[in-house]
Length: 259
Ligand code: UDP
Image 1 (cartoon, helix red, strand yellow):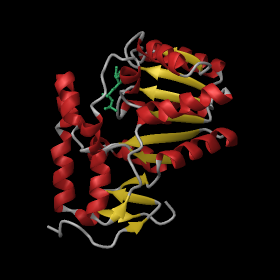
Image 2 (cartoon, rainbow, N blue to C red):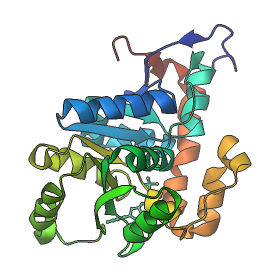
Image 3 (cartoon, protein in one colour):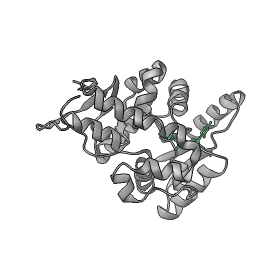
C-alpha cells in the first residue's frame, strides 16, 4: 500500500482512474466547454463520472470505451476527487449532473439555450421543468420524455427529440443505460450536446431531496441516498470496492497527457 498522501500536487488536465479518463475541470470550465460544443454544433457526449461508474467500467468494456471516447468527462463525486488527491493530482471541484443542469437552465433563461429532458418516471421531467421555470423564468425546455419506454418506441422518441431541435439533451436513465443510449443515438439525433445526468430530474422535481451540503462535501451523500431509496443499495455496494481499488492500487491512477 502507498503512503496516505503525496506532498507535491500537480495540476493536470485529465486523469485516468483504473483506465477511465476523467477531465480535471471546474464547473465554470465544464459549462464553457458545453457552450463551445453547442456553438460548434457537432454532436458531443458529456459524461458525469462518479465512483460507481469507474467500478462498473472495470467489467463493462463498452461503458469504458464510451467514457474514454466522450468529449468531456466531469468528476461527479467526492470519491473521484479523493482518489486523485491521494495520488497528488488536484481536481478543481465536483462537477455534478444536477449542478450542470441548473447552470444550463440559468443560461437558457438568459439566452434561449434549448434543453430537452429525457428520463425518470412519467411526469418527473415535466415537474423538474416546471420548477426550473418558476426559478428561472424564460428557461427554454424544448421537450420532456420519461425514461420507461419499450425498445419499439425508441425511433419515435428519437424523431420527437430531433423535431424539438434542442441544443442540449439531458438524459437521466441511470448509469450505464444513459451513456449507452446517448452513444447509440448521438449521430442520428445530431443534438450538439448530450449529457448523462443520473437522478437529476428526481432531485429537481422535488421528489427526492438532495443530501444536505455537509453530506455532499464530506462524501456521505451515498448514505443519504440509500436512506431515501433502499433500492440504491446495489449501486452503493460498489463504493467499498472503489475505496479498496484506490487503497490497494494507486498506481492505476495516472495523468493523461493531452487528455
Ligand atoms: N431511469 C429511467 N429509465 C430506466 C431506469 C432508470 O428513466 O430504465 C431513471 C430513474 O427513474 C432515475 C434515474 O434514471 O430518475 C436514475 O437515477 P440514479 O440516481 O439511480 O442515477 P445514477 O446514480 O445511476 O446516476
